[in-house]
Amino acid sequence: MLSLTGVSACYGASQALFNVTLALREGEVLALMGRNGMGKSTTVKVICRLLAARSGRIEFAGYDLRRLPAHKAARLGIGPVFEGRRRFANLTVGENLLVAARPGHWDRARIEALFPRLGERFRQPAVSLSGGEQQMLAIGRALMTNPRLLILDEATEGLAPLVRQEIWAAVALLRRETGMAILVIDKSLRELRRIADHAVLLERGATVWSGTMESLTPDIADRYLGL
Amino acid sequence: MSREGAVNAAIVALLLVVPVGAWLADEPFIVTLATRAVILALAGVGLNIALGLGGMISLGHAAFFGIGGYAMGILASHAQSYEPLFNWPMTIGGTQSMPLIWLVAMSVSGLAALMVGALSLRTTGAYFIMITLAFGQMFYYFAVSWPAYGGDDGLSIYVRNGFPGLNTLVPVQFLAICLMLLMLGLGFAAMLARSPFGLALDAARQAPERVETVGMRPYRLRLMAFVISGVITGLAGALYADLNRFVSPVMFSWQTSGEIMVFVILGGAGRLFGPVAGAMLFILLEHVLGGVSEFWHVYLGLLLLIVVLFARGGIIGLLAGRQVAHG
Image (cartoon, rainbow over all chains, first blue to last red; front, side):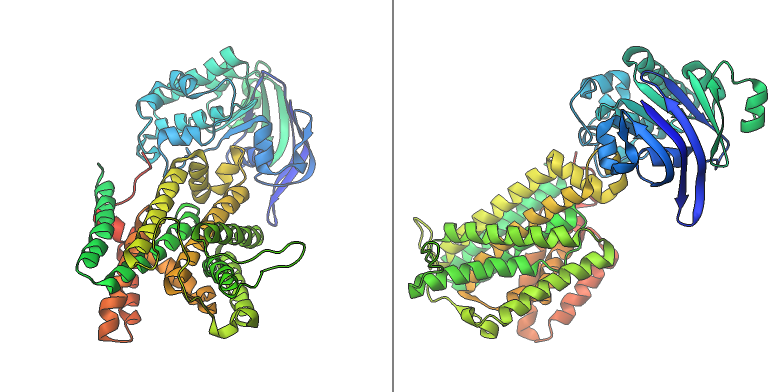
């Protein structure tokens, strides 16, 4: 469904990705891992076409993503949730969800069933939500686009343990009940082991390891993640 | 009713009570002054869609105001002189029917906004401001150098255009027409802001990249808003020309663009009744301070400075508090 082959990308004169290769099949969960500053979020930006790849191939659902602008890539079914709980602050919770809505499985009722707190705060300004609720809103908004691929970039970063559990439970439910492909970036190896099928490890903007979660031994985790 | 709703209702009441009182007291000048405020408010409502909702700082909206004005002037002058507008491929004459003139004014200003927007919205920030300003000045110099329609001297229309069932030469009846159009414009702007398109436009103003990642193209959203904005401003231009029974290149000038922007900022950019409050205050200051000193713009400048520095939400923000999400 999604494949990156030998992708490189730059921020101006500074090269951030050198050789990223990964593949994600329909219904699969892939963990993209690496220490801070190794290119995980940059890879997400490249997939979402917010940053142009300088070389390599990026394919999604049979389309060459390098030929498409960001909004067309999103319309193909890529639903990203970026780090930092980004929401449209001027809009209410409901408006944040509806502005992104596209026809499909995910609608207001299903989002409210997944995150009941969003239903309770439907008419509240998004800016008044707690950090965890804002993250739920960001995930809900991505789901309202009815994506084929959900990308979660540090979705639980900086959240209270109980809220993190709630979000992980929702992601597990998504995986179990919808079979949606998910690309997940997170620091919690324990949670990733529970949810992901495969992992790709990045170091200095390049893929250094890929395999199943079972084959990700403590030795490899220690070498590339410092865990 | 929210605090802002109460402030808006008070503004509507003021717009009704003052001219009706003036009419009963046989003060047609006050009625005309109120009509001017209403028409300029409508121009501000148009700009507010681009500026307040879409975050597009256009210094070229006088182009659409002027196009609306000239649409009225050209159609009415041909109707007066019985000279057709075109003879080929068929003969088309002028008209003095207001609804028809509005339709032409809105269509032509919409087309112009599409052209200006399609090019200028490829830029942002200072470049966007400069390109819209340049387009406005282009139209200005075109009008100056168009002798067929008065050139620099402008074009006079001897009789105000007609509206079915009303005598538009009676100031209060013309005011009623303008007020009705302002209310329609405000209703449309309110609906637009709450529609999925309005929400997307607001979102694109806040975070264009994020909007792209949910599958929308900010350029297209902004272009549509810019065209709608131009159409409303063009309609205001046609009414303004009818009020004065005169059009001149001044309607296209950058000072006119600046004045429309002043109404919006003074009243509260992005607030539904912001342009109405701004235009009313502008006309009031012009009338009161203009009688005291011909340099009354100095006081207006000071007021604008205070609003920009200390009251970002403009008059509406001061009276109704900060804007929260649409709720």
